Image (cartoon, rainbow over all chains, first blue to last red; front, side, top):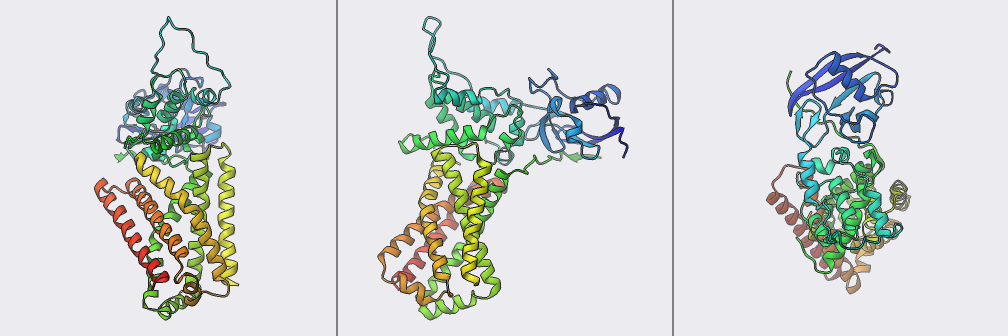
Length: 241
Length: 120
Length: 109
């Protein structure tokens, strides 16, 4: 094992494929994204991968690195390379387009399925909504609002891999944000969307989502809130299933 | 060489995940044990002596250990379950690592209390 | 899980928690100096209190087992939904039947 080289296994192909091995020079302050970019530019131009901002803001570069879903631009090789070895794969729980690019379509479909879009009722002619920042509901919404849909939590979640219809941590976290937004006109609809088969009840509080979220959100906490609200609604007779 | 994509398992090495495994495995073990428990007690239908014969059989060392493990499983399932009921029905706490540790400690402690009374 | 099965599981859990605690305490006390049929039956025979206690225990446990087994089988096996429901409900029913038989045995027999 050479201290100056990295031994990298990269997934090539789609759902079927194999790992391709590269030995590449090790550099100071190298990130996983640097590794993938170096390989694509110097070794194999046919390698497909996705990135955008390179500075830990957009979430586009998320991949599975040595078994964990991470933002590759924010993952230093020195922190994850086990004895100079790296295994890089596309995000888990999503269909693979090619090599390291995953298809996020199911992720966004589930986002919509959890009623992740805002339903307003006011118009430009109405007064601004007065929402106090320290109200508990606003604080709950603000705690989850920074999600940038990188799908790291979705990949980390085992329930997502066990149940195809499970909406997943990001979608449910978003639903909780909508539910706590007093300007949203259909918060009851949010509960209905998350109380069905693949909804919040399927969460087993593993907290893998919270452990892996690069923005330090806690979808498990949001889902716990949805569970409580759903149970209350069920007890009051609001049966959805 | 072609292989089906080897879906690497996400990093599961954290307390809340271990707590889930303990909760599920203990629950399964208890569920499988329960009919045996009921059939044993049902021996009372044949009289106290029939039940006593079975109880004497379960007093063997290996079965006593199994008994202790089941009581510990019940205690851990209880404490873990209370942690979840608290988090979901009362209110979430961000200190789940602490609560997992407390639940594990109390559960194991109850198991030990049983063991000290059963084996001493 | 559906909203209803989730509610039933959490509610049965809330019922089971105090019952299990009492049962564990009872077992720790009873196991001191060994356990005998006389000790058990001496406490339970003819007691409507113990009958009611364990009867409630059996029902709550049956519901709890049904939902729990359903979750385990549907998440960790590739069995069809119908088969999973059949096994989960069937096993829970068996447990309830045997449970009531046991309650009858120690209280009324």
